[in-house]
Image 1 (spheres, one colour):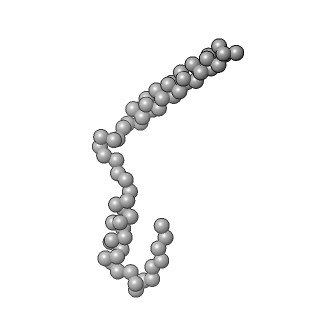
Image 2 (cartoon, rainbow, N blue to C red):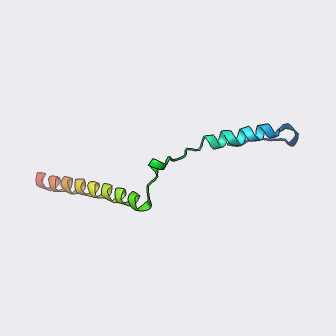
Length: 66
């Protein structure tokens, strides 16, 4: 987001308001949403295993149809 500012037109109150407005729009994670890298990688690897398993089932099914 760009803003045009001329020195004499910008007050300190405006600057404080602007920085608070911008910072309030940044989402923050709660303590319960934070996972360690190890936990995150376990979730990703389990999702990959599920996708791999589904792919193998579909591949076997397609060979049986031929």
